[in-house]
Structures are given as C-alpha cells and as structure tokens.
Image (cartoon, rainbow, N blue to C red; front, side, top):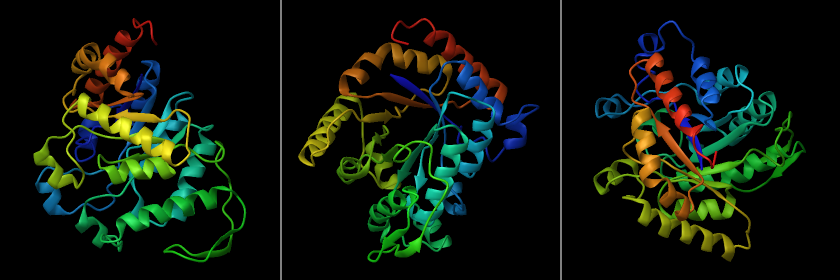
Length: 304
C-alpha cells in the first residue's frame, strides 16, 4: 500500500511562519527521501469569507506548487487532491496537467472532483447547478486535448473545432485520472472515466457540508469498493484500479504509524491501494520530522 502526503491545509494562511527558513520544495524532497509515494495539493482559487470563517482554508494553485516540488525531486508522484473540474476550462486544465506531466518525467496524477462550494463557483463565473454535467463533459474534453490531434467536439458545454494542444503528456494516453467523492455517482464516474477513486472518511454531520456521502469506516468502504468493481465490470472495464483513501484521524507521523499498524491490513483487504495523510504540524520543520518518522517506519516493513 502506497502513501500520499497532502499539503497541510492550514499552512497557506500562515505560510511565512510555517515555512520558516526552508522552501516549499523541501517538503517534497523530505517525502521522497522518506520513501513516500506522492505529494498532493488541493484547489481553492477564491474561497468565500463565510466558508473560511467556518473552518475552511486557502490553497496554493496546485499546478504551480507541484511544479516547484517536481523540480527538486525525481521519483515521487505529483497528485492534485483534488482539482475542481468546473472551476476552469477543461482545455486549460488539460494544458496544465500535460505540461507538468511532461516536465516532471511522467509523474503527474490528476485528481478531480465535482466541488461543493457554491459561492466559490459563482465568484469564478462557473455554474454550480450544472457541475456534475460539466464534470463529465470536462473529462471527455481533456482526453480529446491530450491526443495532440485536432479536436472536433460539436456538442456539449465545451465545443471546439480545429484546435490542437501540444505538448502531449509524457504518460500515454494521459496521466491517471483519479476521482474524488464518496457517493455512488462518484463511483459511477470512476467506473466510466477514471483510473482511481479518492474516498475520504467523514461522519454523517460533515456530509451536509461537503455534499458527498458519509463514510464511517473500513467495512463500509469495502462495500463501496466492491460496488465500484461491479460497476466497472458491467461497463466492460477490467484490470486493477487505485483506491486512495483518506482516513479521519491520523495527523502526526506517530498517529499515521499507529493507524497503519492497526488498520493497514484491513485497508488492503478492502481494496485500498493508497493511504492519503495530512500532517497537522504547525511548521515545515515539524512536518519534515513527521515525514522522517514515517520513513523510518516504512523502511522496516517487508511489504515496502
């Protein structure tokens, strides 16, 4: 089972204090040296003050931040966790993803989601009510752009006639598409379009805020992974699929190690292939200490 490290959500607001004398790229270097498998960035271009006051957070532009990390590393994967498909033109997203994938030597994984912040959609000139339809159409549009051939799309929200996007991504036919969300509609999208699913643990009280289903534990997750696999078979899709699960709870290196010791085997048996973890460290130095502790633990595991 692989490990993704998510950029701490609270770091951006206090970035100067959080980063100290270091640089953002040091985070990816430390994660790579520790033996982790990916680093990730989320996507909030213009969050509302109301959401921020209720516990929301700021974010770097994910493609810009991941490009800094790519330039200082050679192995670790670069994951958007996640980009909201409806916030921008799919052709702009496709260009950013292809550029990062090519320049990083094929290390990009594009994590996408429908989004749930209505105010942010409106501020960005995006259609919140149509976000599901736009999401589905965006994936088709991006795949067309990644061919490197002239695009002809006459129907839907993203028509294009006689346009070509180069460079192509390094990975062919395109970077892996992972789709976030706990709902059956999210799993249906994964079955139809995706290479991976990104569920996250949350209690029922949080479901009304995030706009996706509650997910309380590994047993419930196992049932949904089985459902996803059945959906894929029904569509004639076979082969392995990644499941990147973000459990609720582990916030330090020690807590992640405890979680893996207690739940790692159950996660693997359920079909989880990745664990996504976000440190609550208040400084980059503390974050790196967490990564080093996890790295020391991973080095002792025979399955690594």
